[in-house]
Length: 559
Image (cartoon, rainbow, N blue to C red):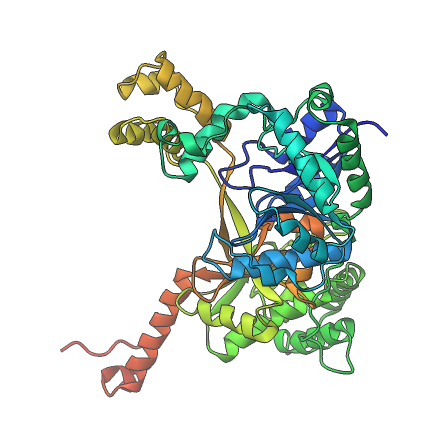
């Protein structure tokens, strides 16, 4: 057996810690001849779908994992062996995240007392060596001692100390890298991100910075200089055990919207038939029948009946509560959406040529996307209805990955490098608010900067590397993921910044890759304005006055 599998690697989804994207990490691992790469972001699987995409077409296998620090306890890397292990890891991350404020986590010793089958653990010992015996009871035959060497002042002594500890505890040792970047050249960016994370300048952050640039994906010959062959070979044996793939996940839509004795197919057909007679009280034309049948057959073939039923259920609730709502977008091309009351535009009306295939087609192989707007002042009622209907364990908002744009990146970098606050703001103004391009030399000169200044060139180089990096997770305006089984069997869930809101750790754009459907519960201020107008009209009509004594189209006499 020859080669190496890196089992401890952070991507840039360990926000402001990892200094490389999954794409960069897998490309370099491929060039170096690695056999596998574990993406082990801290208490998070937020970047694992991007890692799956990066590993496609690569000879480097993706291992799903996570780095965790137990409160007042040891630091671990957990690696997923199979589906049950993945589900247990999602539950652990959720437990730790839900216990703390947004952006933080608290994992307690008692959280690991439940069965942990399907998870492999690498213990990263620091001072509390007695933790090894406790961990052995949690991970029998599934625990290793991680040996991480980074060309420090006494690597040989550190290696000898860890090998003695492994022998004393009976825990096999394995080589790991604690990788934070794909190449040594990212060291300056990693230092800068560390300073940003700790709200310090790089000059002040010395105790938090790594001593050198060794926490990158290193060449195999360099690793052989540092580690005994058996520790490198052990990494491959562990990698061989990690067979889980995100494609193993089986997402099932909830069944609440289907009455007993019905199937999603039969119930959707029943509601469509009911709605068709309401929409066309004078009779359903042959053209309409053919269009509805065509749509229903495709919906059934792609197994999206429950999705349409869920949107119909949410819209029906809003109408019962007299909350104005309106479907829009490509869903207006669907006769099924029209007769279900989700949209108000009749796609079969004479003169309209709305293609249903723009909304849903077999060839595109994309899930339907129905956007429904609700009164913005009452949208929260609809959101809480979804939480009540399906439960907090089965419904959550999807996340949005906020990334660094030019202005935010250059401001943070300039601050980390110690530029005065005035210059930080001026540089951000040079970028514009949403652009991802660096300011031109001409624009910098206009603002009083010298583009050839070494300090400014350093700011610009680091800004260029930081633009596009994930900055933090925020909540989608109203995109819900709802599941038949607990969401924690699919993805970790954490607290949002807003009270009574929970979000999954995956970005809305990652859902298609893993087959999850999103229901959009959005807000529109104009609907609130319309509601106020209707209420005002009702109030005027109900009051005693001249407006009650004259027909609507008749003006009262002037006095």
